[in-house]
Length: 630
Image (tube, rainbow, N blue to C red; front, side, top):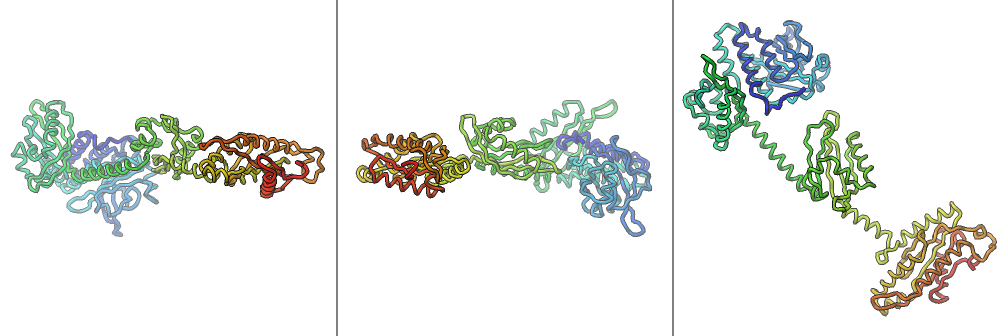
């Protein structure tokens, strides 16, 4: 159901309903004759689908019950309970789900879905989803109940609707008291003076001159009634100085327009008796003069001080919340889903972190367009899963920014549910680029040598184990070259460790350029390096226990050629900051599965071959096997 915003409701809706209620009650021969018109005015003003009036009575068993006095229904619903004045219902059942606490609270409301048993079933049968009730008091007793039904489960019931319902309930209660015939003017005055608001009538021909004002002027504004009527400037004299100029300007424009259109204003008044400030909502309309009838301004003033205090508290709390959010070193966002009425929000951190404006973010495509192509599917899938499962997720992904930078984003997001459906997506984004770079650096250092940048012994062992396992499955060979840099100690002692480090880095480069792309070069530590040559083709005669039919297998020939290239590359001097430094290496070679059946023995045999090579002289290599490579 579409309901008007209470802050923009035309005066005619509220005041017209009040006028219709009081006028009909005082014009009827008996108050019950005006029941249908009163209920219709309430229903049309509040947008209700059904308005019912019940009168209380006690059963023989002392149980509090009520009988239906009258009912009005909108065109969209069928009469549900108006079967005659004999319809009787006990409180706590069916259309009266409230107990005697209604008399204490005055008004009560709630959704039908929260009810149980007969009450919920009765409402569902007549398509009612929301119910509001107001106690009708007459002569200081709880006389009955005014009940409103809505087909909409969320009719946006407002404070203004509640005040209107209270006023009508009060007017009904006053009319019930005066069942005996009485002059219409007396009825009118008694009804008006029980309304919890200030009703007034001003003379349209005399600025600020009141013809009538309700007695509530004294309790609400602290101004005696006779003083308000006798002093034409009482209104403007007691108005807050900060509101005076704009309020008077609007009022004069309203009078000068000559259209009779309603005027709604909110301003502050200062009580002359105690100096307290009272917020007033003033709604009025003009009745233009006609032949034989002077023009008047009729209106009503409500005390909305409490409402304004709550609004100030809400604004202060919201400002504090926003200030705290803006201090978060990241991005806080709220994204409405489906038909959510929430406003989208993103904190100022979006510009600092992602370099995009809030307008670009709200466009809806910016986030998706700047996701790293390798992470897009995973990030989008995580977001979509949120709407379906409403579970909070934490995801990490990369984004390419407009300036070409690549940043890592850590996102924590969740969906806020309302009425069992996804309402808003809200989350926090943080720039975790430094953390990811640190993690990558730590990972690199865990498997690489800091000085040369080559893989270290840990990575070499892992890759060697995988290569040997693969060789077993595919019946191929794996070779290990144990490389020792000759005379590094002499270089360190004579030229310093800085020059020795330069020689080590040069050795790492020469080793890497001497092997195949699929081979692995690692630094073992100190002056020792390791080379793994995987996936070598192994001829049948090279298998363990076979009788060799050739002086060398195809696998051994390839490994020997690699060793020869390394020795050749290392025979030329290394250019250092101290000048050319002579360099050479000693190499030991071992082959799986010929020389060893596991990685550990393979390394051990290559080490033994390297020491034999050292004994033969600089710049040479030696093969562990004594037959296939002899």
